[in-house]
Image (cartoon, rainbow, N blue to C red; front, side, top):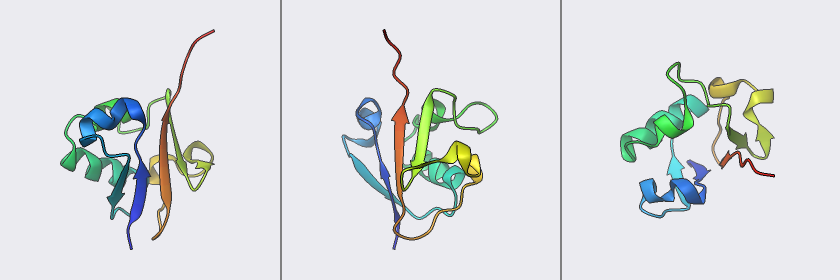
Length: 91
């Protein structure tokens, strides 16, 4: 069984408008690498030059923020749901 990545609306133009994408990665970092291989250009919107998730991008695994887990090294198991949520500024 794979893991599901919920793609936010602003990034769906890169995924052919797919809202839910399945990956077979073992960690968040590997999931982003797999997404990049299938959807070129998506990684640069999610991670910085060091490969760390950008400050303004929130990533959750089963509703838990990876910043409070192991960041991009957060382990994934079959059936996990990954949510990518870009931060929104305004006021």
